[in-house]
Length: 249
Image (cartoon, rainbow, N blue to C red):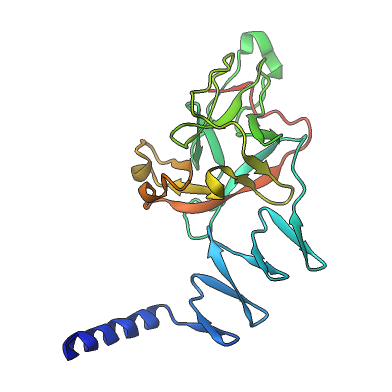
C-alpha cells in the first residue's frame, strides 16, 4: 500500500470517528448509535430502534422478556382480550403508527377497511375504525363479529395477510402459527429462526399509497429487504368485549 493510500485511509477513519464518536464502556469503546452501555461494563446492541436491556449476563428485549431479581423470563402471554398493534422504532416516521387491515393485507400506518351489513346488523355494527386482534396458541385472528371469523397468517411471500370473511382459504406455504403476543410487550414473529419484523417503505414494498409494508424477515429473504428497517410491534390492550369490526375488507 502506498503512503498516499495510507494517508487516505487514515483520513477516512478520522472522518468516521468524527461522525460516530466512540464512547467508553469499562475498557471497551463503542458506537452509541449501535450499542448501549449498562453499569459501565456491559454492552448490548440496539435492535429495531430498541436499546436492549441487560439481565444477569444476557441482553434482552422488553417486548418479549422481563428481568426480576436478576432472573430473565418471558412476559406473560396476552390472551383472552383484544388488542391493537403499533409500530415501535423511533428512527422511523411511522413510529407509534398503527398496524392496519385493508385489502386482506396488514400494513403499517395505512387505513383500516371494514364492512358491516347494516340492513342485517343495524345499530350493532361496530364503528370499524380500528384494526384489532386476538392472540392464542401461537396464532393471530382478527377481532370481528362475522360468523367463522377471520384468521391472520404469514403468506408464502412473508407478508402478513388475513382470510376473506366466510372463507377459510389460506394459500399453501403460509404460516398460521409461530407468533406471540405478550402482556406489556409486543407481538413477536418467531418464524424464520426469529428474524422478526421489518417495515418496508411504499416504494420498497411495491405497493401504492402511503402505507408501509409489514414483512416477516427470514434467512432466505433478508438480502432482498435492504431497503426495509427492523421494527417491533407494541401490544396495546383493549377493554374486554371490544369488537374491532363486523369484518375486515
